[in-house]
Length: 143
Image (cartoon, rainbow, N blue to C red; front, top):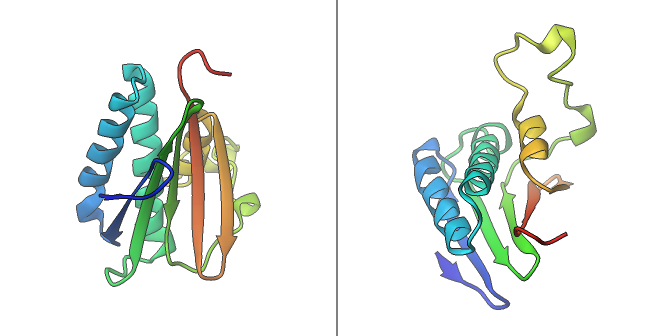
């Protein structure tokens, strides 16, 4: 993990599912140190691991020479995490609705939907040189 200025931490991983557990462990550690309740720690960890997995498989197409960068920023309002890949990007508006009858039995396609329900805010910065998804979870008692 690399400490950056302004209270940010960043870690860069090769684009491989082999690093999923390490990404989850770092995320959980940061969320626990920020004093999130156990359920919120789980929510944050699930969201980040889902997005990490998407970055590896969908963004970087399992190309281990590409990178996935996780950046964490904790402030008085909460924890912000960005997950950036080096893929060709995607259109968030074009994601299929996992609750539509024709998608209920699909084996995939629920990740972003799940992340949106676990986190307080989700933002997309999609370019042809990569996707960056930023998620935010408010600290308890912060609106």
